[in-house]
Image (cartoon, rainbow, N blue to C red):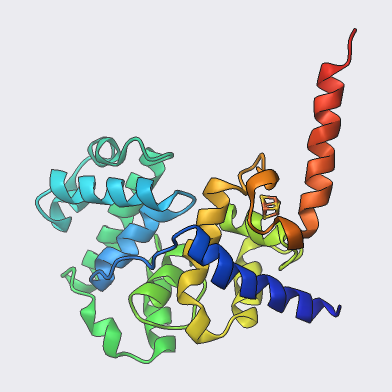
Amino acid sequence: MPALAVKARIWRRLLSTVRRDLHVRLPHSRPVLEQMLYAVCRRNCSRDLADAAFSRLKSVFSDWNEVRVSAVREVADALAPLPDAFARAEQLIGLLQDVFESLYSFDLEGLRNKPSQQAAKQLARWHHADNFVVAWTLQYALDTHALPLDESTHRVTVRLGLISPDQPLASAASALQRQVRKDDAPPVYETLSAMAHQFCLPEPRCQGCCMRSCCPAAKALTHASATNLLRRKKPR
Ligand code: SF4
């Protein structure tokens, strides 16, 4: 089967069977600023962990300005047990500072009325808005065709053969975006993320994975873990 047809089949399965079986939901609607801040919590984390951390953040601090002027340690404590809580806290405070310095406000709703390229440029201008944060905000707040990709979802797409393992994260996100129509894009991140945190972990659980029948990496990985198991069991 030609490579493009194989990829199309994998996408179809991901966005129908896998999405249904893993009960994938789209992210909650949020104001633009909050969607951008939520992305900082979400990168490489499961939905449940990120949702809980973001709720804690909003309940501990009275508003976003209080987060901006707080110590990194205090914000990190509110995010814990999110992994890398300190680095995320630094990025959140940095983002709030970037926005405040450029607009003297935290209201980003005006971005919804801007042409997508202009909105993308504005977001990317903020020093602490990395590619993931920009793509997340474009997709989930501004309804623009963008595909957020972090290290965990990148791992899944490489194993499924949708992108080459040599392709760096930034260009991989653009390559994947070209494989998916705009209307199909909203559930992509959540579906890949559910896979990344339930089955396609760094040590994959291919046995129970719903993509096993069409995953090019499954055979090799299963063989490798079986060999490792045999090696471990070998008598001295
Ligand atoms: S079959 Fe294994 S390697 Fe392939 S997507 Fe599922 S868990 Fe990942």
